[in-house]
Length: 383
Image 1 (cartoon, rainbow, N blue to C red):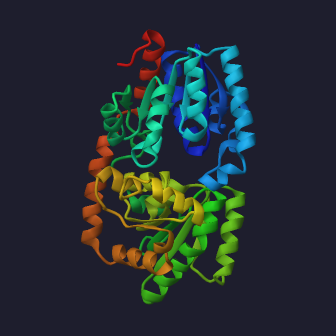
Image 2: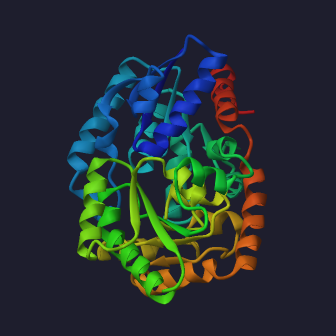
Image 3: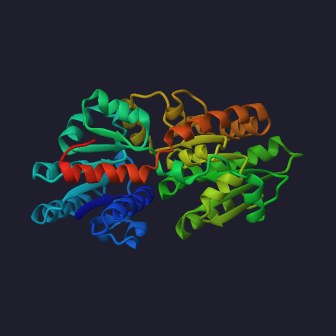
């Protein structure tokens, strides 16, 4: 069996690698070709282009890269139509994958999209194009499947792989001991995002919030720790630390973001997949996000939901503070962090909510997704 597959960023690479493993367990002869990340390549995927060339975000940011992205997509379309795979799987990257899937489906190739575009949240007019492009939508969250069912579109809620991997209970002290972190201090993790543009907007604000916390809890032992995804982001964050004077009690760690979040008491985090991971680790968090003024203005016109962070979307109510654009100030973020540090009851209630959501998402997602894909290939239908 030959499978076409395209991912656009590291979170998709994780999902893709898990899906590949599960497919290979059921169909050892399967091969994968398209655009893959390092984890998928390690599993045997043939990547025709570097995944990083698709890693762009924001409306205005995409415009400058459009000719290059269109060229890559056109070549993939031509190649897959000339030598059709048994099925094509687009993993996330909806702006790139949806048109690719549309062209392939029109050519008679079965198409699957893994990770729902946020059509339920904004730009709902896209549902028509998605329904014309995708034979089967695989969703990570139950509210997404409910949306597609209401649109009479083939869909399967498979759960989230992170919910399968992360234990329901975490021993914070054990992790701190293993990482040689102080057990008796309050630890605040700082995760300003994995992209350069995210650090551009949030690194200084999070570090200023850290200083605000120290200023307002002068007699408490508070320590900050930040995981760095790569050398470029580390250099960028170090520059932000130096702009604050370089005197913060902060430790930068290469990788190990999950362990750092598990060891923390509270997390300052950019909106995105990291908020889901923090939720599964049952950690109080303050979610922030900033975009270019134009991108934010356009986005605001098209949004259909009142909350944007995954914990709040999954809880169907505001359970963690989320601060966007002008609301994402050092003072607001710092005050919310202190509110968690000083209120044990608030932390305990939040942990109970997160535990309940974790159980709902724990479905052996990769196996569920693989079975759905193979069923589509075998019968042309979804179960």
